[in-house]
Image (cartoon, rainbow, N blue to C red):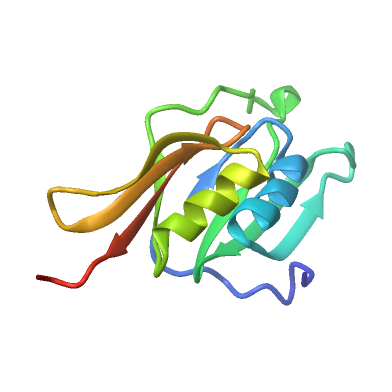
Amino acid sequence: MSDATQAPAPTGVVACFVPENASAAADFYKKAFDAEELARIPSSDHPDRLMHCSLRINGDSIIINDAFPEHGFAFEPLKGFSLHLQVDDAQAWYDRAVAAGCNGVMPPAVMFWGDLYGQVIDPFGVRWAFGQALPKP
């Protein structure tokens, strides 16, 4: 983990979301998705809450933080999106996530577009998808 001044700035589209208990979510993502923590900045007023946490998962970045209702940023349950990881071994990623505590909602299977594809939901309500390109017949 590096401090905020050393963390590389992410590029491209970066998912930024507010799970309930960002610190616990960051720790969980390290276990379930082999996330690398790039920066963790606690709130100076509320050290139990994170103002910013940058993680790298499978080469790409996500940013999470806690809700701060006293500043107009109340917690809202996450819904209506999933985070897709294109990986070399979808079954292994799915198995690790389930072993860490994710709910397996779609075990990996070969889909009509030719990829091995599966989904889990983590304890914070985020749906994660794993896709693996398979050799063409």
